[in-house]
Image (cartoon, rainbow, N blue to C red):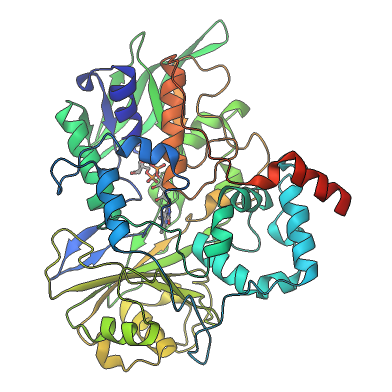
Length: 507
Ligand SMILES: Cc1cc2nc3c(=O)[nH]c(=O)nc-3n(C[C@H](O)[C@H](O)[C@H](O)COP(=O)(O)OP(=O)(O)OC[C@H]3O[C@@H](n4cnc5c(N)ncnc54)[C@H](O)[C@@H]3O)c2cc1C
């Protein structure tokens, strides 16, 4: 959708010439959010954004009108909302005694500092497919810094050292405010209502055709003078196989995989089904295209180990303010000002976020919704003797109330919908250069890739920004546009010559 918007806004392509084929029933992919008070609300994720980064995202949303604030853009309404509701977490980490952990200090030892510096100053091509644990010792993973950083950004010790290093540089401003999350910006509602819907409406108003329930299964191409040209798209639209011709001068932008592929929802009474890419087919297209074509990357680097890339989230719909009131008394944060509360000693490594209410456009005043997640769903809980991925919503609420020492009565009428995401951190898996294709792969005439699995120098995955940047790069390059893409802001002064001289002396 971002690519379509850049084509219209910057490439002067008429919207009527653009078609989006989407496998799901609604647009927006991972930025989903749906439901009602009766059946319960559900969203796979809740996003933290910043205005110090996210250059391409805000560049896009400076052009998209708000649906609810006439005369304003989505960017303007989001900025104004964040001026009114500033993040200032007062209970970022909670321990097993339900005590708020002091987080003013990162808790680094001298060894941690030296190792962190060494990792952050090693050039990326020197890191190969190493893991974070190859660079940092055991003690580092016990520091408040790791507990906050890992649960803010969903890192695991076995994830890519190269990606972790990129995060240290890209989000360096977060170091000094990670304990309060003061740098985090939120959308007014969930991201489907606040980001997807306005963009979709804008695209529709420009005549873009959006086809849901349409899975692209293959593409046809020919090679002219070593330049690959897509000539057709094969897709399954509402159960029927169809072929779409790609004519000379057309461009094709392919989504090569998704972090929420094979995700599944449970209910108060049942755990989510354990699906894999074989059930969903979401990785299939990239696997097919990359077969025998190293310039299209290697999906196996990312999708081969669910045990290392899976976690679960859950969305809770309440009809009784007791839970929100109890959280306010405990944390000191009104909903929408606190950000993540992480139960750092919990076996599941569970966190919850109480966003500003209402969080859904159609949410009545007497209903509250919050979201949470746990990074170790394969471990037995502290209060429920089961791994989280075998638990239904009722059991997840029981575990949560255990950590909070809340009486179960506060969630008596709650509806908790769990969501299992087997590839949620697949883009953090250790990778080698070349495992991700650039948005426009070498030798491509009219084909580009967009997703979290393309290579964009210096930018970081698991962000909306990465996908929007990929879309902007793909469009500008394929259309041969002479227009600058907003650069990754160089907040990190450690890259300066002076700093490098200090590091050299230190080594
Ligand atoms: C739990 C969670 C928390 C997150 N937290 C944050 C955060 O705090 N901050 C942040 O910036 N980002 C966050 N993200 C990441 C962000 O949401 C994603 O990076 C971004 O939404 C990915 O967008 P995308 O369009 O590349 O891919 P997706 O959103 O994954 O969309 C891909 C779409 O392509 C479709 N598709 C795939 N293959 C085919 C095919 N063959 N044919 C037709 N359609 C196909 C899929 O159905 C899907 O709709 C989070 C994501 C999740 C899930």
